[in-house]
Image (cartoon, rainbow, N blue to C red; front, side, top):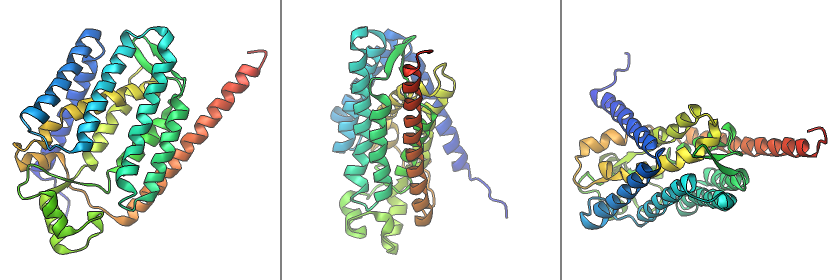
Length: 314
């Protein structure tokens, strides 16, 4: 029998398309100096209101730290694009490379190693090193765009597959679903990575209380790839698009994590997938190969650049 998509599946597709369009609109606004500053400041103010005053979003310390590091970081990027003196170019570019590398290290150090996910965490550590290698002293501003000369499709693709693999095995609490507190889940499922617990009571509670972020994360990471395809600088503009899209996503978190949002709406964002340990193993191996290829590509690029500089005819 042919598989038929349910109405909720089509609604999820429409919702993702709408969110993608909103991100695109935000991104275009930030291509204007004053409008970009105003939008990012409004996002920062909105997070203060929804988190601390109205308390609409869960007060997860890691999420709070990420929100109030990423959005100010993008504000700094807006300043770098429009107002930073040329003399500060290398300093700002290196700062951005370090911030992105730290962001890549965080899930491996704080989550994956504890869960026994060693291959993808290793790939993340290597990708962080590659980020420094690609971004160090290679960023500049061209036509008001943050351009990283070392960023090619090899790096952008390696980051893409690493990030979506990161969320293939992760499940998240749906705060809009009642009776899904962390204490309750721990009492039923125990400590450790929940997907390894075969107990039926645990799996049923996970089905009721948690959703998978894989599809949403894939859409989020497709955004900077699409922006790069249509940019005159190609993948060299990927770091800028990735930074802005992450800030927009964090600002919009209240839409799908608010305590006042219906469970049915949240389920449209956290689309369920079938987790398979064998698929996950080979997925991690593929990511490791992609990151290794990124290193190879960068080594060849630097080798060719060094040869061109040493050639007296060049």
